[in-house]
Image (cartoon, rainbow, N blue to C red; front, side):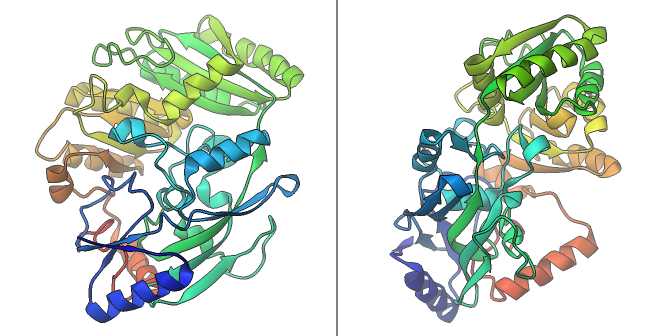
Length: 408
């Protein structure tokens, strides 16, 4: 396989134009940490952006950072942490789930995947924090979208389309993102022993309150996850978790109020600061289904559905397939590890999801499964047609990451 290492955006333009002329599609990578997600691509050429790794500018007082697409996530997060700031949408590190080396992700991969963590219920997703981008289209032309200010009214906000597009619309070369201060303090409230449906009601109660919760999750009791604990939680005992963040005095007061609110569901325990943060990092990175854990050989689905339907849906899915699930976003996000089968239970899963208006992505699977199963949820005809028109407006020759989201 040919690898084209680019040095600057001009190199990217030339590489795309050469690919168009040769009718040779390109696979776009930074360090390749997410190459195992999506359909196997129909290409023999790799466009390597790892040399585009500069932090172009960082203005902590303005809460804005501009980076080249190949900038390593580990370096960027370390820089932000030195200023007590963070990406508020809590981007997922896929290395634990996929069994790849830690610290290999890049900023471009983070935006292209758009995988937000538990704080999404409060802060929004990656696209909500992407202020602007420079990119190269499938025509081989550079373009700019958005800007370097938080309030941007420059016309169509095309940069939002790039988030979650998995590199199928353009090659991002530089992005500008909004950052936010880290919370001074955090506490996690824990209810033990609730079944999935009752936990769903407790999570909905917390989310519907005025106490500004920033994470709501549920780990059902499981014999399958034995030994794959989250921060010491016993997998044989269910745990429902509610996180509160902010100024210390406010967190203490709100934790007291939410504890009172949830008292009808059982005794509320409390975990503080560093121990609390470790729990939510484990949930964000799907540690219960780690590649090195008891369920490491099972396919893993990322399911998004209406939060109020999550508990009943996940409980039935685990029962009927013999699989294991846990919940984030108050029930709106379900992580499911299902026993190996010819289609990873895709037909059953998607039929049930279509009935409640949800969708599922096969985030971890063997190459054989990814060759036979639609990794991304099949779209309704009208939505699919719109997606095709968007793709054609950016990349009419289907040069960029051909076949990653829709089978070529």
